[in-house]
Length: 608
Image 1 (tube, rainbow, N blue to C red):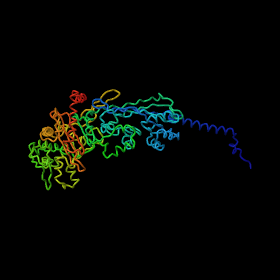
Image 2 (image 1 turned 90 degrees about the vertical axis):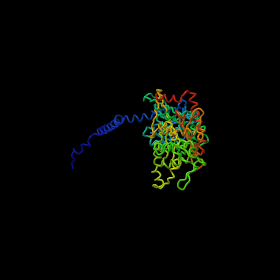
Image 3 (image 1 turned 45 degrees about the vertical axis):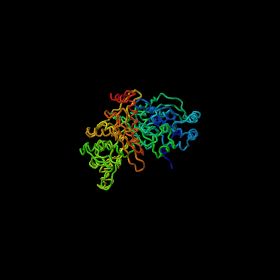
Image 4 (image 1 turned 180 degrees about the horizontal axis):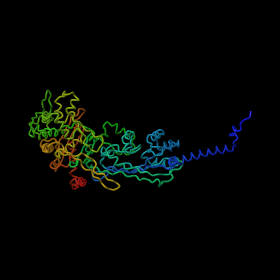
Protein backbone atom coordinates (compact mmCIF):
# COMPACT_ATOMS: atom_id res chain seq x y z
CA UNK A 1 0.00 0.00 0.00
CA UNK A 2 1.32 3.40 -0.97
CA UNK A 3 1.11 6.22 1.70
CA UNK A 4 -0.03 9.69 0.76
CA UNK A 5 3.04 11.99 1.13
CA UNK A 6 0.80 14.77 2.44
CA UNK A 7 0.03 12.73 5.57
CA UNK A 8 3.71 12.77 6.66
CA UNK A 9 4.28 16.43 5.93
CA UNK A 10 4.36 17.42 9.68
CA UNK A 11 6.89 14.75 10.51
CA UNK A 12 9.01 15.91 7.64
CA UNK A 13 9.61 19.35 9.32
CA UNK A 14 13.25 19.57 10.30
CA UNK A 15 13.86 19.12 14.04
CA UNK A 16 15.71 22.37 14.30
CA UNK A 17 12.51 24.27 13.53
CA UNK A 18 10.71 22.43 16.28
CA UNK A 19 13.49 23.43 18.65
CA UNK A 20 13.22 27.06 17.55
CA UNK A 21 9.46 27.01 18.10
CA UNK A 22 9.80 25.50 21.58
CA UNK A 23 12.52 27.98 22.52
CA UNK A 24 10.39 30.87 21.26
CA UNK A 25 7.37 29.78 23.25
CA UNK A 26 9.51 29.38 26.41
CA UNK A 27 10.99 32.82 25.82
CA UNK A 28 7.53 34.35 25.50
CA UNK A 29 6.48 32.66 28.77
CA UNK A 30 9.52 34.04 30.57
CA UNK A 31 9.00 37.52 29.12
CA UNK A 32 5.33 37.41 30.14
CA UNK A 33 6.20 36.32 33.67
CA UNK A 34 8.90 38.96 34.03
CA UNK A 35 6.50 41.58 32.71
CA UNK A 36 3.93 40.50 35.27
CA UNK A 37 6.45 40.60 38.12
CA UNK A 38 8.06 43.89 37.15
CA UNK A 39 5.15 45.83 35.68
CA UNK A 40 1.92 44.44 37.12
CA UNK A 41 3.22 43.39 40.56
CA UNK A 42 6.42 45.41 40.63
CA UNK A 43 5.28 47.86 43.30
CA UNK A 44 4.10 45.08 45.59
CA UNK A 45 7.35 43.17 45.45
CA UNK A 46 9.34 46.35 45.73
CA UNK A 47 7.60 47.11 49.01
CA UNK A 48 8.19 43.58 50.24
CA UNK A 49 11.87 43.86 49.43
CA UNK A 50 11.99 47.20 51.20
CA UNK A 51 10.63 45.60 54.34
CA UNK A 52 13.46 43.12 54.29
CA UNK A 53 16.07 45.84 54.70
CA UNK A 54 14.14 48.99 55.73
CA UNK A 55 12.47 48.98 59.11
CA UNK A 56 9.98 51.42 60.56
CA UNK A 57 10.91 52.55 64.10
CA UNK A 58 8.25 54.14 66.28
CA UNK A 59 9.32 57.33 68.08
CA UNK A 60 7.50 57.63 71.37
CA UNK A 61 6.17 61.10 72.27
CA UNK A 62 6.92 62.64 75.64
CA UNK A 63 3.82 62.32 77.83
CA UNK A 64 2.47 65.59 79.17
CA UNK A 65 3.26 66.66 82.73
CA UNK A 66 0.65 67.45 85.38
CA UNK A 67 0.86 70.53 87.65
CA UNK A 68 -1.12 71.85 90.58
CA UNK A 69 -2.85 75.23 90.42
CA UNK A 70 0.32 77.06 91.51
CA UNK A 71 2.50 75.44 88.84
CA UNK A 72 4.12 72.82 91.07
CA UNK A 73 4.85 69.49 89.39
CA UNK A 74 2.57 66.67 90.49
CA UNK A 75 3.58 64.25 87.71
CA UNK A 76 6.78 64.51 85.69
CA UNK A 77 8.93 62.29 83.46
CA UNK A 78 12.40 60.82 83.41
CA UNK A 79 13.95 58.52 80.80
CA UNK A 80 13.68 54.74 81.01
CA UNK A 81 14.66 52.02 78.54
CA UNK A 82 12.37 49.54 76.81
CA UNK A 83 13.44 46.49 74.80
CA UNK A 84 11.68 45.88 71.50
CA UNK A 85 11.87 42.95 69.10
CA UNK A 86 10.77 42.52 65.47
CA UNK A 87 8.52 39.44 65.06
CA UNK A 88 9.95 38.67 61.61
CA UNK A 89 13.45 38.22 63.07
CA UNK A 90 12.10 35.92 65.78
CA UNK A 91 10.59 33.77 63.05
CA UNK A 92 13.74 33.86 60.89
CA UNK A 93 16.20 33.23 63.76
CA UNK A 94 14.74 30.37 65.85
CA UNK A 95 17.19 30.67 68.77
CA UNK A 96 16.66 34.45 69.16
CA UNK A 97 13.97 33.77 71.77
CA UNK A 98 16.32 31.69 73.92
CA UNK A 99 19.06 34.34 73.67
CA UNK A 100 16.65 37.04 74.88
CA UNK A 101 15.35 34.73 77.58
CA UNK A 102 18.78 34.49 79.21
CA UNK A 103 19.32 38.27 79.15
CA UNK A 104 15.86 39.47 80.19
CA UNK A 105 15.10 36.63 82.63
CA UNK A 106 11.89 35.74 80.84
CA UNK A 107 10.93 32.24 79.78
CA UNK A 108 10.99 31.56 76.03
CA UNK A 109 7.31 30.61 76.09
CA UNK A 110 6.44 33.89 77.83
CA UNK A 111 8.39 35.87 75.23
CA UNK A 112 6.68 34.10 72.34
CA UNK A 113 3.25 34.51 73.88
CA UNK A 114 3.90 38.16 74.73
CA UNK A 115 4.99 39.02 71.19
CA UNK A 116 2.20 37.00 69.58
CA UNK A 117 -0.46 38.82 71.58
CA UNK A 118 0.93 42.28 70.80
CA UNK A 119 2.29 42.16 67.29
CA UNK A 120 0.84 44.32 64.51
CA UNK A 121 2.38 42.66 61.47
CA UNK A 122 5.73 40.95 61.04
CA UNK A 123 7.89 44.04 60.66
CA UNK A 124 6.47 46.42 63.30
CA UNK A 125 8.54 46.18 66.51
CA UNK A 126 6.85 45.00 69.70
CA UNK A 127 7.70 46.22 73.20
CA UNK A 128 9.04 43.20 75.02
CA UNK A 129 10.13 44.53 78.40
CA UNK A 130 9.77 48.04 79.81
CA UNK A 131 12.18 49.82 82.13
CA UNK A 132 15.04 47.35 81.99
CA UNK A 133 17.86 47.61 84.53
CA UNK A 134 21.52 48.45 83.95
CA UNK A 135 22.59 44.79 83.85
CA UNK A 136 20.06 43.92 81.16
CA UNK A 137 21.02 47.02 79.18
CA UNK A 138 24.71 46.04 79.31
CA UNK A 139 24.05 42.48 78.20
CA UNK A 140 21.95 43.68 75.29
CA UNK A 141 24.74 45.97 74.13
CA UNK A 142 27.38 43.26 74.50
CA UNK A 143 25.34 40.76 72.49
CA UNK A 144 23.91 43.17 69.91
CA UNK A 145 25.51 41.33 66.89
CA UNK A 146 23.72 38.14 67.95
CA UNK A 147 20.34 39.83 68.47
CA UNK A 148 18.93 40.77 65.05
CA UNK A 149 15.74 42.83 65.18
CA UNK A 150 16.26 43.67 68.86
CA UNK A 151 16.73 47.23 70.01
CA UNK A 152 16.15 49.67 72.85
CA UNK A 153 13.79 52.64 72.95
CA UNK A 154 13.98 55.53 75.37
CA UNK A 155 10.55 56.00 76.93
CA UNK A 156 9.39 58.32 79.72
CA UNK A 157 8.72 56.94 83.17
CA UNK A 158 6.40 58.85 85.51
CA UNK A 159 7.80 60.50 88.64
CA UNK A 160 5.91 62.13 91.51
CA UNK A 161 7.94 64.86 93.21
CA UNK A 162 5.10 66.49 95.18
CA UNK A 163 4.48 65.84 98.89
CA UNK A 164 0.80 65.51 97.89
CA UNK A 165 0.33 61.96 96.67
CA UNK A 166 -3.16 62.51 95.20
CA UNK A 167 -3.02 58.95 93.88
CA UNK A 168 -6.77 58.63 93.34
CA UNK A 169 -6.85 61.93 91.47
CA UNK A 170 -3.76 61.42 89.32
CA UNK A 171 -3.98 57.70 88.59
CA UNK A 172 -1.25 55.77 86.76
CA UNK A 173 -0.32 54.50 83.30
CA UNK A 174 0.20 51.01 81.95
CA UNK A 175 0.03 48.89 78.81
CA UNK A 176 -3.36 48.71 77.14
CA UNK A 177 -5.26 45.48 77.78
CA UNK A 178 -7.23 43.49 75.23
CA UNK A 179 -10.47 44.50 76.94
CA UNK A 180 -9.53 48.19 76.72
CA UNK A 181 -8.48 47.77 73.11
CA UNK A 182 -11.98 46.62 72.19
CA UNK A 183 -13.48 50.05 72.87
CA UNK A 184 -10.38 52.22 72.37
CA UNK A 185 -9.28 50.71 69.06
CA UNK A 186 -11.71 52.94 67.18
CA UNK A 187 -9.91 55.97 68.65
CA UNK A 188 -6.56 54.96 67.17
CA UNK A 189 -5.16 52.93 70.06
CA UNK A 190 -3.27 49.75 69.25
CA UNK A 191 -1.62 46.79 70.89
CA UNK A 192 1.30 47.67 73.12
CA UNK A 193 0.25 51.31 73.70
CA UNK A 194 0.86 52.84 77.11
CA UNK A 195 -2.32 54.52 78.36
CA UNK A 196 -3.79 56.12 81.47
CA UNK A 197 -5.40 53.51 83.67
CA UNK A 198 -7.04 55.56 86.41
CA UNK A 199 -7.70 59.10 87.53
CA UNK A 200 -6.71 62.11 85.46
CA UNK A 201 -4.20 59.97 83.54
CA UNK A 202 -7.15 57.98 82.17
CA UNK A 203 -9.66 60.84 81.90
CA UNK A 204 -7.33 63.02 79.82
CA UNK A 205 -5.19 60.32 78.20
CA UNK A 206 -5.70 61.62 74.66
CA UNK A 207 -4.40 65.05 75.69
CA UNK A 208 -1.45 63.69 77.66
CA UNK A 209 -0.25 60.97 75.30
CA UNK A 210 0.76 63.08 72.29
CA UNK A 211 1.30 61.51 68.86
CA UNK A 212 3.87 58.92 67.85
CA UNK A 213 6.52 59.72 65.28
CA UNK A 214 8.36 57.36 62.97
CA UNK A 215 11.79 57.04 61.42
CA UNK A 216 13.19 54.53 58.96
CA UNK A 217 16.41 52.60 59.34
CA UNK A 218 18.28 50.25 57.04
CA UNK A 219 19.16 46.80 58.36
CA UNK A 220 21.50 44.16 56.98
CA UNK A 221 20.65 40.58 56.11
CA UNK A 222 20.88 39.63 59.79
CA UNK A 223 18.43 42.32 60.85
CA UNK A 224 21.11 44.54 62.40
CA UNK A 225 20.73 48.30 62.14
CA UNK A 226 23.05 49.85 59.53
CA UNK A 227 22.01 53.49 59.25
CA UNK A 228 19.15 55.92 59.66
CA UNK A 229 17.42 56.90 56.42
CA UNK A 230 16.21 60.32 55.33
CA UNK A 231 13.84 58.84 52.76
CA UNK A 232 11.08 57.98 53.46
CA UNK A 233 11.00 61.22 55.42
CA UNK A 234 10.88 60.68 59.19
CA UNK A 235 7.91 62.08 61.14
CA UNK A 236 8.86 63.62 64.51
CA UNK A 237 6.71 62.74 67.55
CA UNK A 238 4.33 65.37 68.95
CA UNK A 239 4.64 65.74 72.74
CA UNK A 240 1.51 65.49 74.88
CA UNK A 241 -0.15 68.52 76.41
CA UNK A 242 0.57 69.53 79.98
CA UNK A 243 -2.34 69.70 82.40
CA UNK A 244 -2.80 72.29 85.14
CA UNK A 245 -5.14 70.97 87.82
CA UNK A 246 -7.30 72.87 90.27
CA UNK A 247 -5.67 70.98 93.16
CA UNK A 248 -3.66 72.84 95.76
CA UNK A 249 -0.74 70.56 96.66
CA UNK A 250 -0.46 71.97 100.21
CA UNK A 251 -4.14 71.45 101.00
CA UNK A 252 -4.10 68.03 99.40
CA UNK A 253 -1.05 66.96 101.42
CA UNK A 254 -2.67 68.19 104.64
CA UNK A 255 -5.90 66.28 103.93
CA UNK A 256 -3.91 63.10 103.30
CA UNK A 257 -1.95 63.63 106.50
CA UNK A 258 -5.09 64.19 108.60
CA UNK A 259 -6.80 61.13 107.15
CA UNK A 260 -3.76 58.89 107.63
CA UNK A 261 -4.74 55.74 109.53
CA UNK A 262 -8.44 56.19 108.69
CA UNK A 263 -10.71 55.04 105.93
CA UNK A 264 -12.39 58.11 104.56
CA UNK A 265 -12.18 61.15 102.32
CA UNK A 266 -12.08 64.94 102.25
CA UNK A 267 -13.19 67.33 99.51
CA UNK A 268 -12.66 71.10 99.32
CA UNK A 269 -14.38 73.06 96.53
CA UNK A 270 -14.13 76.64 95.32
CA UNK A 271 -17.78 77.73 95.52
CA UNK A 272 -17.31 80.38 92.80
CA UNK A 273 -16.21 77.93 90.11
CA UNK A 274 -16.57 74.33 91.33
CA UNK A 275 -12.78 73.91 91.17
CA UNK A 276 -11.63 70.99 93.34
CA UNK A 277 -8.91 72.26 95.68
CA UNK A 278 -8.66 68.99 97.59
CA UNK A 279 -9.88 65.48 96.88
CA UNK A 280 -8.28 62.99 99.23
CA UNK A 281 -9.19 59.35 99.83
CA UNK A 282 -7.63 57.03 102.37
CA UNK A 283 -6.17 54.49 102.35
CA UNK A 284 -4.41 55.33 99.12
CA UNK A 285 -1.61 53.74 97.09
CA UNK A 286 1.96 54.59 96.18
CA UNK A 287 2.07 55.80 92.58
CA UNK A 288 5.77 54.91 92.36
CA UNK A 289 4.75 51.25 92.62
CA UNK A 290 2.82 51.70 89.38
CA UNK A 291 5.41 53.74 87.50
CA UNK A 292 7.26 50.56 86.59
CA UNK A 293 6.06 47.15 85.44
CA UNK A 294 3.07 45.94 87.45
CA UNK A 295 4.25 42.74 89.15
CA UNK A 296 2.13 40.06 90.79
CA UNK A 297 3.44 41.17 94.18
CA UNK A 298 2.27 44.75 93.63
CA UNK A 299 -1.07 43.55 92.30
CA UNK A 300 -1.74 41.47 95.41
CA UNK A 301 -0.53 44.26 97.69
CA UNK A 302 -3.23 46.62 96.46
CA UNK A 303 -5.96 44.75 94.62
CA UNK A 304 -6.26 41.91 97.14
CA UNK A 305 -6.10 44.30 100.11
CA UNK A 306 -9.25 44.16 102.30
CA UNK A 307 -8.86 47.91 102.98
CA UNK A 308 -9.42 48.56 99.24
CA UNK A 309 -6.75 51.24 98.78
CA UNK A 310 -7.47 51.44 95.04
CA UNK A 311 -11.00 52.64 95.72
CA UNK A 312 -11.59 56.39 95.50
CA UNK A 313 -13.92 56.88 98.43
CA UNK A 314 -14.61 60.53 97.58
CA UNK A 315 -16.39 59.70 94.31
CA UNK A 316 -16.88 55.92 94.21
CA UNK A 317 -18.09 55.08 97.72
CA UNK A 318 -21.62 55.90 98.79
CA UNK A 319 -22.90 56.11 102.36
CA UNK A 320 -25.96 57.28 104.30
CA UNK A 321 -25.17 60.96 105.00
CA UNK A 322 -26.79 61.13 108.44
CA UNK A 323 -27.59 64.55 109.85
CA UNK A 324 -25.59 66.37 107.15
CA UNK A 325 -28.66 65.70 104.96
CA UNK A 326 -31.07 67.53 107.27
CA UNK A 327 -30.69 70.82 105.32
CA UNK A 328 -32.26 69.02 102.34
CA UNK A 329 -35.55 68.25 104.07
CA UNK A 330 -35.52 71.72 105.63
CA UNK A 331 -35.34 73.28 102.14
CA UNK A 332 -38.02 70.88 100.90
CA UNK A 333 -40.40 71.89 103.67
CA UNK A 334 -39.77 75.61 103.21
CA UNK A 335 -39.89 75.81 99.42
CA UNK A 336 -42.98 73.60 99.16
CA UNK A 337 -44.72 75.86 101.73
CA UNK A 338 -45.41 72.87 103.97
CA UNK A 339 -43.70 74.71 106.86
CA UNK A 340 -42.21 78.10 107.66
CA UNK A 341 -39.08 78.80 109.60
CA UNK A 342 -41.31 79.19 112.67
CA UNK A 343 -42.53 75.59 112.58
CA UNK A 344 -41.78 74.07 115.99
CA UNK A 345 -41.56 70.59 117.44
CA UNK A 346 -40.96 69.40 120.98
CA UNK A 347 -38.21 66.89 121.67
CA UNK A 348 -38.43 64.70 124.78
CA UNK A 349 -35.61 62.48 123.63
CA UNK A 350 -37.81 60.32 121.38
CA UNK A 351 -40.87 60.33 119.15
CA UNK A 352 -43.56 57.68 119.35
CA UNK A 353 -44.72 56.78 115.84
CA UNK A 354 -46.95 53.81 115.33
CA UNK A 355 -45.80 51.12 117.72
CA UNK A 356 -42.18 52.19 117.77
CA UNK A 357 -40.05 54.83 119.49
CA UNK A 358 -37.70 56.87 117.29
CA UNK A 359 -34.92 58.31 119.41
CA UNK A 360 -32.98 61.56 119.36
CA UNK A 361 -29.23 61.45 119.79
CA UNK A 362 -29.71 63.63 122.91
CA UNK A 363 -31.57 61.34 125.29
CA UNK A 364 -32.67 64.15 127.63
CA UNK A 365 -34.46 65.91 124.81
CA UNK A 366 -33.99 69.36 123.33
CA UNK A 367 -37.36 70.79 124.31
CA UNK A 368 -39.29 72.94 121.86
CA UNK A 369 -37.29 74.11 118.82
CA UNK A 370 -37.91 76.04 115.62
CA UNK A 371 -36.21 75.20 112.33
CA UNK A 372 -33.01 77.21 112.80
CA UNK A 373 -32.39 75.81 116.26
CA UNK A 374 -33.41 72.36 115.11
CA UNK A 375 -30.52 72.55 112.65
CA UNK A 376 -28.18 74.03 115.28
CA UNK A 377 -28.87 71.20 117.72
CA UNK A 378 -29.23 68.57 114.98
CA UNK A 379 -32.37 67.40 116.78
CA UNK A 380 -33.58 64.11 115.35
CA UNK A 381 -37.08 64.46 116.82
CA UNK A 382 -37.55 67.83 115.12
CA UNK A 383 -36.69 66.30 111.76
CA UNK A 384 -38.80 63.19 112.42
CA UNK A 385 -41.78 65.52 112.72
CA UNK A 386 -40.70 67.42 109.63
CA UNK A 387 -40.34 64.16 107.70
CA UNK A 388 -43.90 63.14 108.57
CA UNK A 389 -45.22 66.46 107.25
CA UNK A 390 -43.12 66.53 104.08
CA UNK A 391 -43.51 62.90 103.03
CA UNK A 392 -41.54 60.70 100.66
CA UNK A 393 -42.62 62.26 97.38
CA UNK A 394 -41.74 65.87 98.20
CA UNK A 395 -38.53 64.85 99.99
CA UNK A 396 -37.32 62.76 97.02
CA UNK A 397 -38.26 65.54 94.58
CA UNK A 398 -36.14 68.11 96.42
CA UNK A 399 -33.27 65.68 96.93
CA UNK A 400 -33.13 65.34 93.15
CA UNK A 401 -33.43 69.10 92.65
CA UNK A 402 -30.26 69.33 94.72
CA UNK A 403 -28.64 66.84 92.31
CA UNK A 404 -28.63 63.74 94.49
CA UNK A 405 -29.18 60.41 92.79
CA UNK A 406 -27.05 61.53 89.83
CA UNK A 407 -23.38 61.96 89.08
CA UNK A 408 -21.83 65.37 89.68
CA UNK A 409 -19.99 65.08 86.36
CA UNK A 410 -16.51 65.48 87.85
CA UNK A 411 -13.74 64.71 85.37
CA UNK A 412 -12.80 61.38 86.94
CA UNK A 413 -13.85 57.91 85.77
CA UNK A 414 -16.22 55.56 87.62
CA UNK A 415 -18.18 58.10 89.66
CA UNK A 416 -20.99 56.70 91.82
CA UNK A 417 -24.38 58.38 91.45
CA UNK A 418 -25.70 57.40 94.88
CA UNK A 419 -29.36 56.57 95.56
CA UNK A 420 -32.50 58.56 96.37
CA UNK A 421 -35.15 56.03 97.54
CA UNK A 422 -38.41 57.47 96.16
CA UNK A 423 -41.87 55.88 96.13
CA UNK A 424 -41.13 53.81 93.01
CA UNK A 425 -37.98 52.43 94.63
CA UNK A 426 -39.76 51.56 97.89
CA UNK A 427 -42.69 49.94 96.04
CA UNK A 428 -40.26 47.82 94.06
CA UNK A 429 -38.32 46.79 97.16
CA UNK A 430 -41.21 46.13 99.58
CA UNK A 431 -44.27 45.84 97.32
CA UNK A 432 -46.71 48.57 96.32
CA UNK A 433 -47.67 50.60 99.41
CA UNK A 434 -46.45 47.78 101.66
CA UNK A 435 -43.53 49.70 103.12
CA UNK A 436 -43.72 51.28 106.54
CA UNK A 437 -44.31 55.04 106.66
CA UNK A 438 -41.71 55.03 109.40
CA UNK A 439 -39.07 54.68 106.69
CA UNK A 440 -39.53 58.38 106.00
CA UNK A 441 -38.47 59.19 109.55
CA UNK A 442 -35.13 57.49 108.98
CA UNK A 443 -34.64 59.14 105.62
CA UNK A 444 -35.47 62.55 107.11
CA UNK A 445 -32.32 62.27 109.24
CA UNK A 446 -30.19 60.89 106.40
CA UNK A 447 -30.45 57.19 107.26
CA UNK A 448 -32.13 54.23 105.61
CA UNK A 449 -31.57 53.42 101.94
CA UNK A 450 -30.40 56.94 101.08
CA UNK A 451 -26.82 56.88 99.70
CA UNK A 452 -24.53 59.78 98.78
CA UNK A 453 -20.87 60.30 97.96
CA UNK A 454 -18.63 62.75 99.84
CA UNK A 455 -18.27 64.75 96.63
CA UNK A 456 -22.06 65.10 96.37
CA UNK A 457 -22.13 66.42 99.94
CA UNK A 458 -19.43 68.97 99.17
CA UNK A 459 -21.54 70.01 96.18
CA UNK A 460 -24.55 70.41 98.51
CA UNK A 461 -22.50 72.69 100.77
CA UNK A 462 -21.51 74.72 97.69
CA UNK A 463 -25.14 75.06 96.54
CA UNK A 464 -26.27 76.20 99.98
CA UNK A 465 -23.38 78.68 100.22
CA UNK A 466 -24.37 80.16 96.84
CA UNK A 467 -28.13 80.37 97.61
CA UNK A 468 -29.00 77.72 95.07
CA UNK A 469 -26.32 78.21 92.45
CA UNK A 470 -23.83 75.44 91.82
CA UNK A 471 -20.96 74.50 89.55
CA UNK A 472 -19.92 71.17 88.16
CA UNK A 473 -16.95 70.04 90.26
CA UNK A 474 -13.88 69.84 88.05
CA UNK A 475 -10.17 69.07 88.36
CA UNK A 476 -8.84 70.47 85.09
CA UNK A 477 -7.92 74.16 85.31
CA UNK A 478 -6.01 74.59 82.05
CA UNK A 479 -4.42 72.71 79.16
CA UNK A 480 -0.94 73.89 78.18
CA UNK A 481 -0.01 73.15 74.58
CA UNK A 482 3.70 72.36 74.79
CA UNK A 483 4.56 73.26 71.20
CA UNK A 484 3.08 76.77 71.40
CA UNK A 485 3.17 77.47 75.13
CA UNK A 486 -0.46 78.61 74.94
CA UNK A 487 -2.78 77.82 77.85
CA UNK A 488 -6.41 77.00 77.29
CA UNK A 489 -8.41 77.73 80.46
CA UNK A 490 -11.43 75.67 81.47
CA UNK A 491 -14.64 77.63 81.87
CA UNK A 492 -16.86 76.82 84.89
CA UNK A 493 -20.10 74.98 84.16
CA UNK A 494 -22.83 76.46 86.36
CA UNK A 495 -26.42 75.50 87.18
CA UNK A 496 -29.22 76.74 89.47
CA UNK A 497 -31.52 74.53 91.50
CA UNK A 498 -35.28 75.07 91.55
CA UNK A 499 -35.53 76.41 95.10
CA UNK A 500 -36.20 80.04 96.01
CA UNK A 501 -32.95 81.70 97.15
CA UNK A 502 -34.54 83.22 100.27
CA UNK A 503 -34.95 79.81 101.91
CA UNK A 504 -31.22 79.15 101.78
CA UNK A 505 -30.68 82.06 104.19
CA UNK A 506 -32.69 80.27 106.86
CA UNK A 507 -30.74 77.03 106.46
CA UNK A 508 -27.44 78.91 106.36
CA UNK A 509 -28.22 80.63 109.66
CA UNK A 510 -28.85 77.27 111.27
CA UNK A 511 -25.53 76.00 109.89
CA UNK A 512 -23.76 79.08 111.22
CA UNK A 513 -25.04 78.24 114.70
CA UNK A 514 -23.94 74.61 114.32
CA UNK A 515 -20.33 75.85 114.37
CA UNK A 516 -20.62 79.11 116.32
CA UNK A 517 -23.76 78.77 118.47
CA UNK A 518 -23.81 77.88 122.18
CA UNK A 519 -25.29 74.40 121.62
CA UNK A 520 -24.00 73.70 118.12
CA UNK A 521 -22.53 70.26 117.39
CA UNK A 522 -19.76 71.50 115.09
CA UNK A 523 -17.81 73.94 117.25
CA UNK A 524 -14.55 72.09 116.56
CA UNK A 525 -14.65 73.46 113.01
CA UNK A 526 -14.67 77.05 114.34
CA UNK A 527 -11.96 79.49 113.18
CA UNK A 528 -10.88 82.58 115.14
CA UNK A 529 -10.99 85.11 112.29
CA UNK A 530 -13.37 83.52 109.77
CA UNK A 531 -17.02 82.59 110.37
CA UNK A 532 -17.60 78.98 109.35
CA UNK A 533 -21.03 77.45 108.75
CA UNK A 534 -21.47 73.71 108.79
CA UNK A 535 -23.38 70.58 109.67
CA UNK A 536 -22.20 67.49 111.49
CA UNK A 537 -23.44 63.97 110.98
CA UNK A 538 -23.05 60.62 112.71
CA UNK A 539 -24.30 57.72 110.61
CA UNK A 540 -25.33 54.41 112.11
CA UNK A 541 -23.33 51.53 110.70
CA UNK A 542 -24.66 47.97 111.19
CA UNK A 543 -21.16 46.56 110.53
CA UNK A 544 -19.28 48.47 113.22
CA UNK A 545 -18.61 51.88 114.67
CA UNK A 546 -20.60 54.86 113.34
CA UNK A 547 -19.38 56.94 110.41
CA UNK A 548 -18.42 60.57 111.03
CA UNK A 549 -19.45 63.44 108.69
CA UNK A 550 -18.99 67.18 108.43
CA UNK A 551 -19.98 69.55 105.64
CA UNK A 552 -19.63 73.32 105.62
CA UNK A 553 -18.56 76.53 103.91
CA UNK A 554 -16.70 79.74 104.73
CA UNK A 555 -16.67 82.67 105.15
CA UNK A 556 -20.33 82.84 106.12
CA UNK A 557 -21.09 86.26 104.59
CA UNK A 558 -19.10 85.86 101.36
CA UNK A 559 -18.46 82.13 100.85
CA UNK A 560 -15.33 81.06 99.02
CA UNK A 561 -14.93 77.38 99.79
CA UNK A 562 -17.12 74.40 100.67
CA UNK A 563 -15.88 71.31 102.46
CA UNK A 564 -17.01 67.73 103.11
CA UNK A 565 -15.20 65.25 105.35
CA UNK A 566 -16.25 61.64 105.86
CA UNK A 567 -14.46 59.15 108.14
CA UNK A 568 -15.62 55.56 108.09
CA UNK A 569 -16.15 54.12 111.58
CA UNK A 570 -14.89 57.43 112.93
CA UNK A 571 -17.57 57.89 115.57
CA UNK A 572 -19.08 61.36 116.07
CA UNK A 573 -18.93 63.83 113.22
CA UNK A 574 -18.43 66.77 115.57
CA UNK A 575 -15.38 65.26 117.26
CA UNK A 576 -13.71 63.45 114.33
CA UNK A 577 -14.70 64.96 110.98
CA UNK A 578 -15.13 68.60 112.06
CA UNK A 579 -11.50 69.01 113.26
CA UNK A 580 -10.21 67.80 109.86
CA UNK A 581 -12.43 70.35 108.13
CA UNK A 582 -11.13 72.99 110.56
CA UNK A 583 -7.52 72.30 109.58
CA UNK A 584 -8.25 72.43 105.86
CA UNK A 585 -10.17 75.71 106.14
CA UNK A 586 -7.50 77.20 108.38
CA UNK A 587 -4.71 76.41 105.91
CA UNK A 588 -6.78 77.73 103.01
CA UNK A 589 -7.24 81.14 104.65
CA UNK A 590 -3.65 81.25 105.90
CA UNK A 591 -2.42 80.68 102.36
CA UNK A 592 -4.81 83.25 100.99
CA UNK A 593 -3.55 85.88 103.41
CA UNK A 594 0.10 85.06 102.74
CA UNK A 595 -0.24 85.14 98.99
CA UNK A 596 -2.49 88.15 98.79
CA UNK A 597 -5.37 86.23 97.27
CA UNK A 598 -3.27 84.15 94.88
CA UNK A 599 -5.84 81.35 94.76
CA UNK A 600 -8.59 83.68 93.63
CA UNK A 601 -6.24 85.43 91.22
CA UNK A 602 -5.59 82.20 89.35
CA UNK A 603 -9.29 81.68 88.84
CA UNK A 604 -9.84 85.29 87.78
CA UNK A 605 -7.03 85.03 85.24
CA UNK A 606 -8.56 82.07 83.48
CA UNK A 607 -11.86 83.89 83.06
CA UNK A 608 -10.27 86.89 81.36
